[in-house]
Structure formats: C-alpha cells, structure tokens
Length: 493
Ligand code: NAP
Image (cartoon, rainbow, N blue to C red; front, side, top):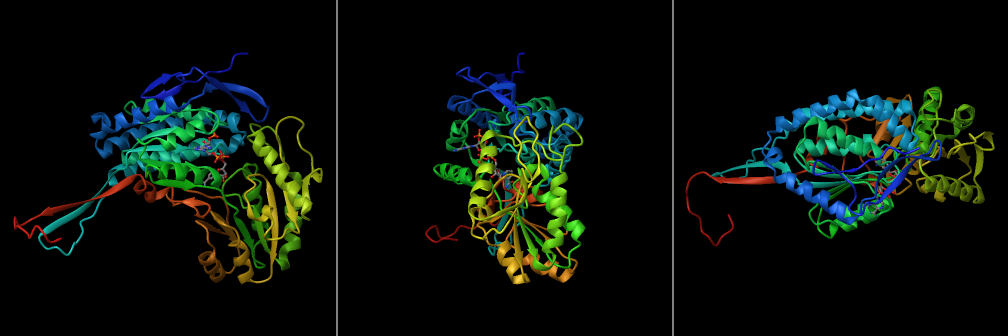
C-alpha cells in the first residue's frame, strides 16, 4: 500500500527536498510506517530561511496593520477549530498520544490562536519621562525578525502554536522544524496557514531526520531568534550554536517536577493529581510530576491508592476511547525508559508496581508500564534526571523544610504540585519552590494567557501570555528633540 506523501512548505510553495530524499514516519501504536515526508538538508533550510527573510520585507506582510495580522490569525483559528478532529487523528497516529488528549489540544490551539490574534494590535510601547526636558522619548516593540522554531515529538502542534501564534502576532516570519518522529502535523499546519491567507514565506516548514536540519537552522546567520522546545542536552547545544551569530534563544526544556503531598491533603484528590502528573501522556510530558514528595504520615494510604490505580490503567490503542495510556513515541525513548528503571533497580530501588509486577503490557506496539519506585536515594540518577516516561519516584519527608529541600533538590525547575488544605502553607510553600509553575491542589493545567517556562536546567524565557509576544520583539527607543536648541557636540547629553 502506498503511503500518503508530503512536501516541504517553503515560500508559499510545496516542494520536494533539493536532494529528492524522503523518509517514513512510523505509527508507534503499530510500529508500521504510515506517511512519507521530505528529508530536508542544509540547502532546504537555507531556502526556507531566505523565504522568511524576503517575507519580512514584503509589503504584504511588513506594511500590514497589526489588526490585519490579527484578522489572519483569527482566520487560522477558525480553520484549526474546523479541522480539530482531523488534526487530532493525524497527531495521535504520528506520536501515539491518546486521541482524547490530542482532540483537546487541537481545540485548545484554536483558542490559543484567537488569544494572540486579539493581542496583535495591542503591542504598545510607552512614553518615557527621560529626565531630559527638551526631549519626547517613546518606545516601540518591533518584530525581532526571522524566528527558527524547533519542536519535540510529544505535543507537536500544541507546542508549535505556543511559539507560532505570538511570533506572527508580533509581525515576525518563521521557519518551523518539527521532530523527525512527528513531522506530519507541522506540514498540515502549513496547509492551513496558506488557506488562512498569510503572505508567502511568512511561515515555512522543513522536515528532516537526525540533527542536521536543526543544526542548519540554528547556525543560519539570517535567523534572528531561536525558539526551542526539547531536551536540556539539545537545548544547550542549540543555544551555543545560536550564540555564534548572537541570535537570542528561548529554551523550553526538560523537568523533574515534584508533587508534594502534605499530611493534611485530600488524599483522593492528591492521588488523582499524582496519576495525572506521571501517567497521563504515558509520562512523555515536560511537566511530568515524576517525583512524589510525600509526608511520612500519609505515605502508606497514598501509595495504596496509587498502586491500585496504576494496576487498573488501561494500556492500548491511543484511538480507543477507553485507553488511558498509549505507547511510547520512539524506539530510543522506549529503550531509555527500560534502561533507567533497570539501573535504578540495580542501585537498590524497589518496584511497587511495574512491568510484570501487576501490569501486563499489550503484545503489539511500544509500551511502558506505569511504574512506582521506592527506596530511592535523592542523589540517584532516577531521582535527578528526566525519564520522560511513566516512572514515579517516591521521596518521603518529615517536615515542611525537608519537603521544600527535596522538591528543590534537582537542577531542574519546570513545575511542581502541592497538596494541602492549609491555605497559609499553600502560599508559603509555593513561594519557596523553585519552579516556573506551581499548582496548588491541582496538576497539569495550562492556559494561553498564563506564562509558562522553567528555572535552572528547565530553560530560559516564558511562553504564553503577553510575555510571549514581547519575546518576539526588539524594544526600540525613539528620541525627539523638541526645542531646536544646539548642544555642545563634545559632551554626552
Ligand atoms: P530533542 O531530542 O531535544 O529534540 C528537540 C528538537 O531539536 C527536535 O526537532 C530535534 O530534531 C531537534 N534537534 C536534535 N538535535 C539537534 C541539534 N543538534 N541542533 C538543532 N536541533 C536539534 O527533544 P525530544 O526528544 O524531541 O523531546 C523530548 C524533550 O522535550 C524532553 O526533554 C521534554 O521534557 C522536552 N519538552 C519540553 C517542553 C517544555 O515546554 N519545557 C515541552 C515538551 C517537551 P529530531 O527530532 O529530528 O532529532
């Protein structure tokens, strides 16, 4: 059976890679190839960047009023809403995420796009009281230029829109490079960007496998900014490459987030939140609550609930509405999860629930068991490093200071959950936890309007909210002399 074939989206045209090479993308639920996409190399990335550069100067985009950019984004939002079901099915096929979650994400990106459409004509500068009475000084926030966007495989469309909507609202042009594991929906997005009526070259999509196309994009001297979501290791390499031509880089990276459960917590709600944190999306989420920091007094009853729930999680076809955990998206990730759990067990960790211990894996496809590990030292790799899979490490504590020390005891700082019925403790601990997002009595909730990003090795910069638009602009200060007076040319004013 022939596979559906895609082409690159460059300068408003659908083109093959210069080399003519292609590669197959695989459905992780079946292990079978299901689509064929172009294998872009340096020449293709160069063409995409040049198209974006040309579009930046094209009056059809450069002279479009901010409200006009907003209208195009609203049109794109309507198209995304119309096609949400189709896009959700494609996304689930490419990365194995539950259809019920990709469906929610594909509807959410339409709302996300509407939010930034509405913001496009509200990017205001300010008038500055400069202390120089004969000058009027004001600022403008102008588009930063061509933005290179690099995406991971776990929530490709959702995370692309975190970048794309504010960048287009700000007036930038973009080159999108999705992960080799999930190239299809970015190309489908390109089709919808064209349908919305964005001028040619404003958004371009290049697909390829291996690091080469991403490296070509980050190293390209005509790229003015890099916006990256992915692993910490790659993020650091990307930032170093962009620094060679002084392109600022926003990094949305990995995490080792803690769910902190105090003795006064509603244990039913906390158990539900811990399950959402680590087993939703099969743990393949940057905000995975991969550490349970739990008060000694409630450790036993909470773990009983978690083990019982983990044993009943339904693994299987991500498109089956009854499925709760789908497959692992890539072969490499599947192997990494098994290796990290094996190493932890060799180091003395005890498995409360896991593969062969209360969980049977489906026979076909790449699956990982919901796993809970106890007797893990805080300095163990499994307690310090991201697994990016459904593996929970349990870390008991005795008092609040110990809880905060454990929660802050890794180099990451993306998110945290805390569970307590004491409102004073909630605010006190939220202030002390070093993380970009803290949920109190909840976990895994995001909004287009709320800044999102990490401390430490979890990244640099914030997405969502108005801060996201600012990150795609440069601030320009304009000084207007008001009196006509001449000044001493040899003295700084
Ligand atoms: P990754 O391996 O770091 O890849 C991210 C992107 O960079 C992919 O498009 C990848 O292309 C590309 N790339 C790889 N090497 C490159 C290089 N040397 N130069 C330029 N680009 C390069 O991440 P992943 O495995 O796809 O995603 C999982 C990671 O993303 C996890 O660590 C997770 O925590 C993180 N994440 C963070 C957030 C957040 O918002 N903080 C959200 C989601 C995921 P190829 O895939 O084609 O190699």
